[in-house]
Amino acid sequence: MQINSYLMFNGNCEAAFKFYEQCLGGKITMMMTHKEAPSAEHIPPEWQDKMMHACLELSVGGAASSENHLLMGSDSPPGYFETPQGFYVQISVAEPAEAERIFHALAENGTVKMPIEPTFWSVRFGMLIDQFGIPWMVNCEQVV
Image (cartoon, rainbow, N blue to C red; front, side, top):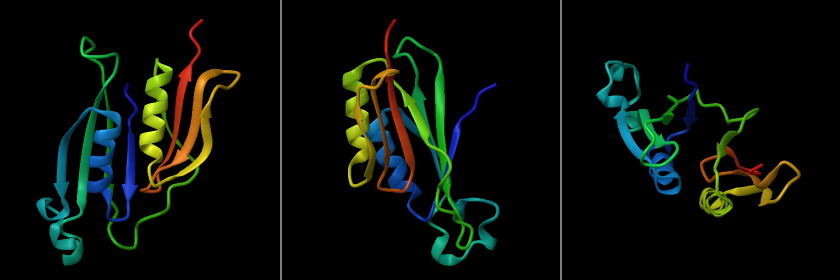
């Protein structure tokens, strides 16, 4: 079983996924607009160029690893978008410098909820809401 995050956006999914590709690395493997989908006739004309589905593939464990995780998302059709709440997308990294880099990249034009710093469970931990309204936690656990 694999569990992946699927994020809903209010018309800015394409920009968000291009931003995440820069911040997190990985590769966008799919971007389909609403007009490219079989359901296009049910979507208002002004929403046709918005994302019906986007997928960012993230490698885990470096180039030698074959394990990948997906971050997926889409633009909710008008009237269906709900502001994200009650969750955070959590990122675990092995190196404190990488945790800080990712945190500060995601925090650009966003809101820091908890600055990235050492905690009793982690050498680095921080929480933020990015510029697209998505909540993130970045964690670098202590090596025992």
